[in-house]
Image 1 (cartoon, rainbow, N blue to C red):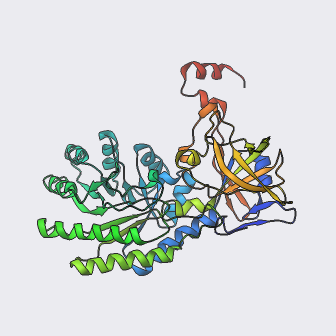
Image 2 (cartoon, rainbow, N blue to C red):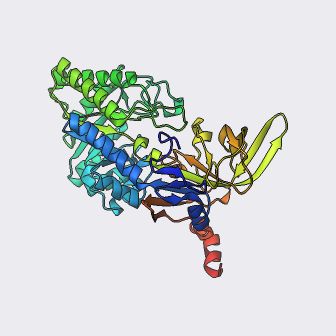
Image 3 (cartoon, rainbow, N blue to C red):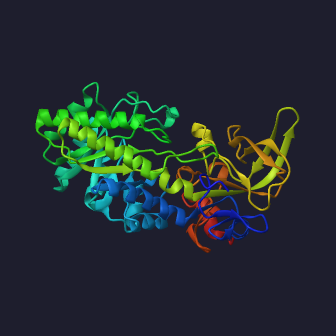
Length: 445
């Protein structure tokens, strides 16, 4: 198995079945059903350690921050904290999950472009370490909440450096035409600083940016760092405010396809620390606390989705559709922004020449296509398909479309299997509907 795409502990056993960390995927599918998501704990922890060590070796005051939006549950949060990582949340719900899992609130940053007064109050009352301000409305809103509570807010200002990373437009966040951040070049970022300094309830620690996701090359990163540090120097000269924290973001790409070659953590650590250090020296700034956000690079490569083939429809001269028992309700990424995946037959050796097929879901949408085109050898009804690279963003965006049940999630560790999330039941579908919930409470099923 290609270890760039699949978790490190993936192999085929003597029966031709795919195993991850010593556990055959066929066994897991039989015991827990499909669709099913599995995560390798070893891969997850190795990725955490690689980023933490690579950066702290070169920049001792580094915070490695995991983005909860990539995937969040109790077991995952505890692993992240055990490995010494901090956490980004973007809603009151993510914050509540983090606190329920016992995550240290001082190591949590609260992002988001439209945080409500209630969410900001929850964050301050919990003792969240940093709140990232995204727009002018939020400056006054947060200051008012902080004043009412008598709790000053430590903040980072999200900047828009106007850098195009040439990724998919729906995951490009550093261009001027973006809903995120204060543009530097039109003066809005400087105006935001002026307003923040007028509110003593707000303590401006420094600056943050996130230019996009699935990045494989460093040029845009280097350009963004230059813009951030130059802005920090201009604010120092204008207001006498030193930059204590700098977060140039994350978005490091992972391999979804065999031909993709993502950069390792050590590569990004060298590029980013060298760029920040050089820029700080050039503008005469002290070296700040550095925050990096690996995002999907932590959890994405650790996850594999399992599906059962239910039907095969061949349209001569057009296409062959291989339909599985999941799809856009558990992984909307291909439909949302043309995400690409590979797949393999997991229950047996793949034999014979491959033929091009489309892997499609079971939902009533023509756009419910997981893989537009892939050569699979001799795929048949009943086969178990494994799709790697599914640890990030699939399940957080999952839905109950068509009355579907969100899948179970398992954590694998050297033969040990733990349930990270139970499969939903029909009763879960009924819970928030007063009529259906009343019926389910009477029904014995």
